[in-house]
Image (cartoon, rainbow, N blue to C red; front, side):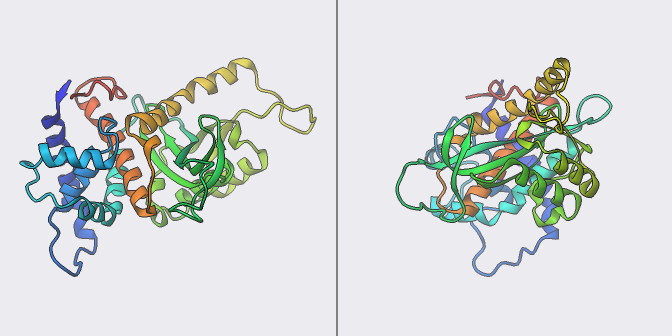
Length: 316
């Protein structure tokens, strides 16, 4: 295990090196006073604060005021830090994309990506009123959560567990709709939504929630995305034939990796505890969680450890 100071220093150096190459491309001439923290410091604190060790953003900030004042002497008040975090949302997205491009799957290359969706609850489903994100969140169903109120998150990973892209919609959004938007942006203009990232393969392994042969044919012809998805069981003679048991088991085994990645985001990086009051704030914290996942993956590789062994990475 690494001590926390080593992990924090390595993360800051990695973020700072990225910002030095990325920031000159951005419009940085904002009006007003100079921020109390540099962009590298804001991104580093935003990413490190996503660990489950702290049960909330407020808890992390209290801890940082007591333990990180020497490393960040100009740490502002929590509302000001939250504003800085929202202002630098795109930097965190591009940092995650940069890490994904640096990380190469083991072996000769990436034969496929696994695509899956999971629910993100933002408030109790039976609570009255519209909530803070009225019109952006609604009620949907998840196998993990049951009926919930929040967002529907779509994540794409390599067979090793590198997150290559993500996107989200309201909880009621269908898997196929999210996937079509995701693949369409990747194939046409990813700059419109940089979080979708860059494809590492033309093949995508999906579960039955994405089924639909006409859709798959459309995605292949229009976006160049070839889908591997087991057909649903049906007595209709016009449906595709049932897959052999061995093939179904293979698809289930290769899809276990994205279930592991979703578990990291939900539990290790506290996605299940999100109760956002602002959409940009949620987007910034989600980008920080994905960036932290890829950074921990990169760090474990540098140390010659199991790439997804995040729990044993830091000696708290």
